[in-house]
Amino acid sequence: MSTTESNKDTVRDLIDGLFTKGDPGAVDTYLAEDFVNHDPPFGVTPDRDGMRVAGAMMRAAFPDWHSELHELVAEGDIVVERFTASGTHRGEVMGVAPTGRTVRLPGINIFRVRDGLVRERWGRLDELGFLRQLGVVPDQS
Image (cartoon, rainbow, N blue to C red):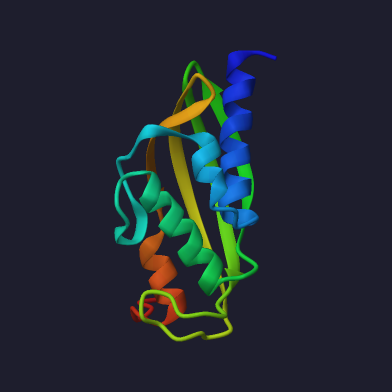
């Protein structure tokens, strides 16, 4: 298997383990000790612990949270993921009581993978759309 394919597998397994299966151990398995998250979502810290918190937060609020992979592209040590995550709001998140709504969160992540571990992440998530779906921010449409 090529390094590029192996890097894609690492990213796929990280996302599946942490967010779809809700396994916080995926952080220890797939993120380097010195991992840096350049765009941490929802105010979490920019390190491994922040990723663990983000995964736990989503799993607690959305027990059926899962990520649908649309594209996974790799070149060298860079892997780009385009996805839509979704789940049913069953627990409190960011101070918002459960609504029972199905929430969708599209996004794009860029990962740097070296020696089988994710070293860095950059990403853009539709956090505003996420907050609108929860009713925190009024819908302007």
